[in-house]
Amino acid sequence: MESIRKIRCAFQRDGKSIRQIAREFHLARNTVKKVLRGEATEFLYARAAQPLPKLEAYEDALLARLRADADLPKRERRTAMVLFEELQRAGFAGGYDSVRRYVQKWRRRKAGEGTAPAFIPQLFDPGDAYQFDWSHEWVELGGVVVKVKVAHFRLCHSRMPYCVAYHRESLEMVLDAHVRAFAFFGGSCRRGIYDNLKTVVTKILQGKARVFHRRFLQLATHYLVDPVACTPAAGWEKGQVESQVSFLRQRLFTPRLQFTDLAALNQWLQDRCHTLAAGHPHPDMPERTVADVFAEEQSRLLAVRAPFDAYKETPVRVSSTCLVAYETNHYSVEAVAVGQTPMLRAYADRLVIEHDGVVLGEHAREFGRHQIRYNPWHYLPVLLRKPGALRNGAPFRDWELPAPLLAMRQALGTHDDGDRQFVGILGGIATYGLDAVCAACAEALTTGTASRDVVLNLLSRTHDEPAVSPAEPPAHLPVLTTLPQANCRRYDDLLSGGCYVA
Image (cartoon, rainbow, N blue to C red; front, side, top):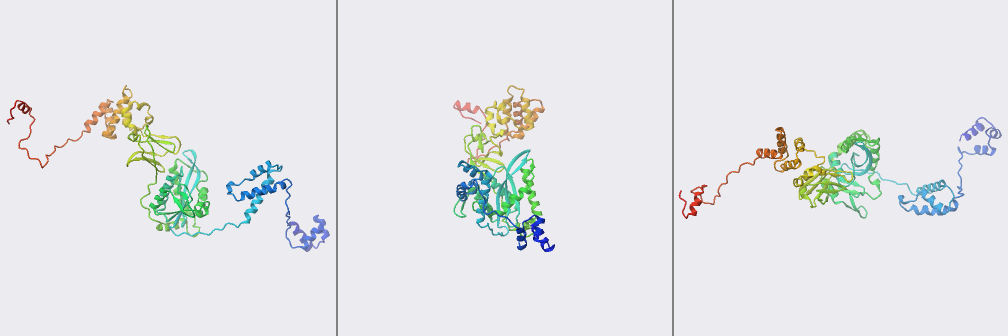
């Protein structure tokens, strides 16, 4: 382009001849004539045919493989390296770069044959729908780098975002995320748009027909939501939340977040959602923020009733060691439930074991593997029968007892039967209550008499049962004219054949 400009300026402006221009610019006169006679501002060279000295003999085999892969899903297509290795086994002696360039050009040309994808912009009424999706993010919790699963919600009309992090993305997490999101939004929408998650959709039927998870349908019924599942591999059907995932990853999770625990992280995420909504213009109404549009949409949301009880229920078997298993971890329950099959309710952060409406145990949920959570009080009935287990029993290794009980245990440690005496004191809790037993232990230690008998004596004196009032005689019985008296002479008189004379 620079040479063309110089040639034309020298000929038309400076009046130089073709011979002089060719001599000064070291060009052929035919080249100078071509520039002066044409109107082109640049000359491009395009090779008519690309020589393939080594690949040409294998071009048909390579094309056959490429055409066969074109009909397969993208993840099942062979890479250029795999195709190169297959040609090598067939005798190809050329380099990998020639195969890679050929594959790239062929696939680029193949992709250009079809029409570019076109989409129709969508418009949602206030309170009409929300979209849901998961993302995986890396954060630092308590000094440990972990991957958390973040549940994303987005109101389709106001574009209001909400996200909450979990250690899993199982069913109970999905349920808990909805409870939190609807509480955050102040209501639910008429429709919810989802992927075909296994925790949401159990079977994909023809068209848009789906069989939804039974427990998820209970949540949808509670909040009056009609769930809608997208077409498989059609993420654009919920493009708003897909865009939100990448946006929040850059704005919230970069650089890597550091928090003490998951609760602190979720509180920060909730606050940041409010901040982002207040500072970002609405894409369809640039003069207003997302928070402004959301404030109007809230009145159109469906009112939230009592929060849904977000748990997944499964039967478990109580072992002889008073433990139930869930996700490779074990949790203790009341000793009376050994051998029974109660129901375990798994929440996002805790587990509750029930049987016939009675709670047998409740624990904070473990997300590691092969962990055991004990509640020493569950083993108290067994301990009363086997007091020797107090010394080496696993549930009692780090037992956090109230201060008076701990002091009493230490004081009884010098006795030969100290464990047995302390277990006897613990047995009084079922009758008198923990507070009363602690008070009796504190009083016994004050007097310097650490003994089971002293503690139980103090409990019996201060917690005697109230006197029973005399029973009134039933109304249908005749009234006694002579009240009975405790007199042994009456029995002697009966034995002698006489009668009692008052």
